[in-house]
View (cartoon, one colour):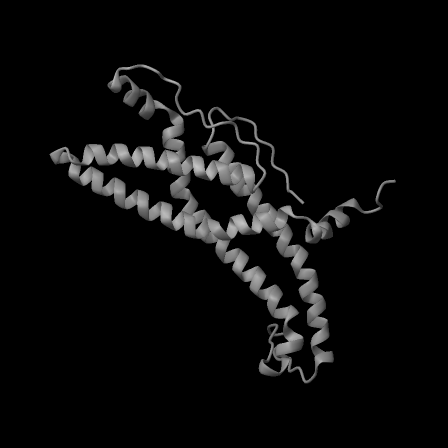
Length: 219
């Protein structure tokens, strides 16, 4: 039997689904991970370039290149196992050439090498923007839900139309609980949308020759 309003059902179903909460965990971890990647890569590459004039920086840059590929593989692992995104195997290079120079040349000519570096750098601003959005939504939802316990400690303003709302009892705060309950599925649907953006970016940047990529919200 078909549900009379499947869209509305899916909107509220996120509250009892496991995936939105996994998405929330992934998104909250994106900012600290992105910050670490940015500091590690920028400082390491800058140091390697500055020391390359005395050849000391060349081995450091090679170590950095190997390091960012390991981090990219870790990000692919997170996207596959937490966001449940279908990302092809990394398969950066299958070259078995014993000539070390040829292997280096293929490594740095491979688009995955540079796409993975760009992905790790983009992780910081994208993670920061995501973190700000989520903290705002989650804090707002929790503030409304907790008003029956905190109503006597604050005065609420909703702008020029309702500049001041002083709550004098738990009954006055109950409508805010309803608002909080309605905000929670909104928050989780936003979480799913942001997770799709992160998953799509990971699939494009951490795999080779990906052209057509589906974009769908997960419940």
